[in-house]
Image 1 (tube, helix red, strand yellow):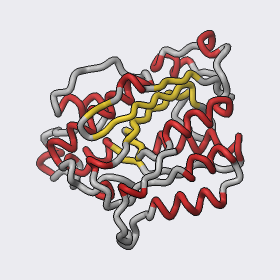
Image 2 (cartoon, helix red, strand yellow):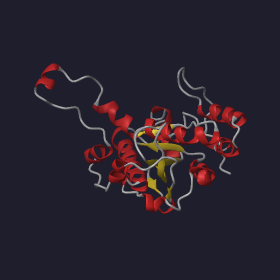
Image 3 (tube, rainbow, N blue to C red):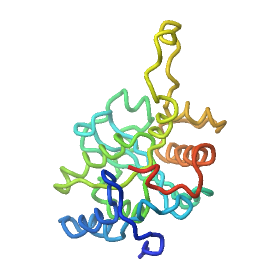
Image 4 (cartoon, helix red, strand yellow):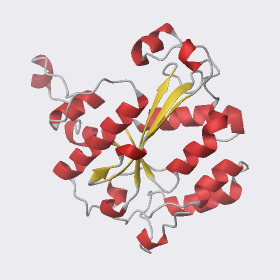
Length: 246
């Protein structure tokens, strides 16, 4: 079991900031599901932990659509990382059989077909494995509303409760720098658009290579590389994780 006490500094979170270690302790005591209990029991670093000392896990999901309540997860990609390295050899990928039918539009996007999912497990069959792989890590995503929303949407009907975890959202980090304020009248009249904060566009700004999108494992890797670039250009390995996470 990973114990994170040696990474934590004993300071109180600022007003409005989530105390994730305390949150995990409370959830470990209150959750009814053993798999979630084991996940929360592994603990979480404090907000004052430096990025260089923070265990990170890039996550991406492919889904049947865009509605976390009505649509389902068809694949999960996880890539463990640090600010200075990505552990690609330890990356994991799962295909899952959703409880809703695949839509033509989603198949066109991610290329996962019904035939590929015929023998795939339900999320509940691999949930313990997925959670224990994520345990102890701050999750890195590109659009936390999607990843958190779909995991909650998948777990609530299966377990009767959702999941909580801190995320570093690479899309939100880009929005901090490229969408600080509404463009002025002249800019709008000239037809200048705000910079895109889609994953591929963000990577392009940092000179990162182009990958084929909409594969959970590849997109998780792409997100991991993007965060490393963002830290190198705009932050520092000595930045406290609370500056980036939510």
